[in-house]
Image (cartoon, rainbow, N blue to C red; front, side, top):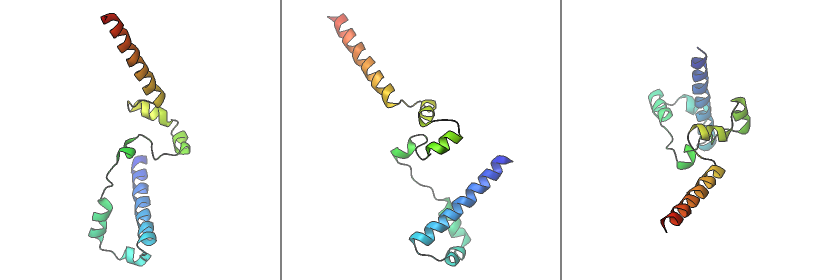
Length: 108
């Protein structure tokens, strides 16, 4: 039940945001937005944003306040998604180089 309420609220928020953008960027009046054909509006509203590589980073659009409400951090979300932090990536590269040097010494 709670998920349904949240989903409905999200859909309403998205519709209001779309109306705001139409008024703000295309200079429509609220009446023009409200008078738009329902099926055309539905088609527009069901269109989806094409993700870029930046969008694929977990939690990229969440503020620190949002993350704290979720009792998590961007690092934790990235770790759960199997992504490495910069420090972890650097450590892996260093370890790889050390292993390469060790194998070269052992091969000589």
